[in-house]
Image 1 (cartoon, rainbow, N blue to C red):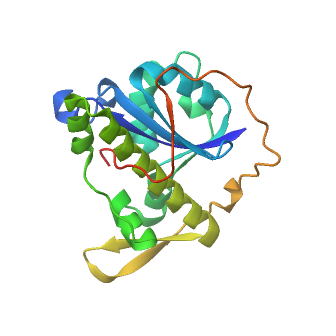
Image 2: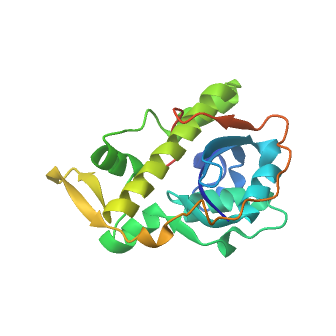
Image 3: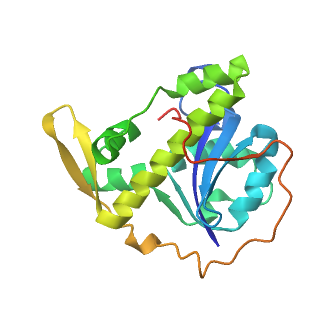
Length: 213
């Protein structure tokens, strides 16, 4: 079974679909993911979502940032045979919020924990999509996946994450308990091989950026 880090970019912003209560109307532009089993970054366009669903069927853990509120309702209408909520998940934002009582941005955690930062916002991703600049869009999305994975790995190893706050001059810490999510590639069962969709791409590690959060 696989552990998958993923992030979704959308075709629309909330103001175009009636507000934040309607994430299912945003529509997918691309999905970026990292497969622990394959040790590979992959990206899927909207028409290739059935191929991503095949990967999800082999997943024993989904990892992301604000996935349950945002990515799940955007993606679920596309899935024919799978309920995302049936797969064990580590939603980094959810875990942090449960400890602190308030939300943090991905950028706040990335800057303090990894000394990395966002190169833009989700609105940039929507603009790339509308311009037909799929190369920039995919790079943008996959960088978000990479940073999310690296934050997860840091928390899994150290049991804590750092974050920045405008109310404190120094970084603060929040505890996480992710050591239980250890992935052992040697004992993982590989999925049956399947032919990729014509346009799906395996991408090298140095890529990308951010969703609406």
